[in-house]
Each structure stands twice: as structure tokens, then as C-alpha cells.
Length: 90
Image (cartoon, rainbow, N blue to C red):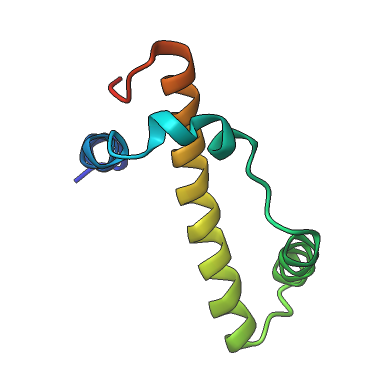
């Protein structure tokens, strides 16, 4: 499956779920930012990753943050669509 097809399928699957709660919380989702301590930790791990200095445990932790950030970005994109279109569909 191509990345584009995978993304489209993910978005389609997520859209139905988001209709449950997103309309009431869309602005909060768009404005969400993690706490400063977490952002500092992610920045620290990102620097170490760039320098190829992560331990296996740090690499696993960093990959978890990367996955979470991608998911949050998808939720924020969907929330912006709700605010602009009053719909979760694309």
C-alpha cells in the first residue's frame, strides 16, 4: 500500500470517530501545545538523534514522541477543517 493510500485510509477511518467529540473541542485541539518540560525533552532527544547519540531506550522514547506528534498533527488538521467547514470530511 502506498503512503498516500495509507494516509487516505487513516484519515477516512479517523473522520468517523472524530465526529463524536471534535466539533465541541475543535478550537482546543487546534490550540493544543504540550507542556514546556515535554517540549524540552523532545528537543533534547531530537538533538541527540541528529548527532546519532541516542541510547536504545532514548531512541524508543523519541520514536514514541514522534508518533504522538504525528497523531496530534492529524487531529489538529481535522479540527481546523471542522472550524472552517463544520465537517470532519475532506
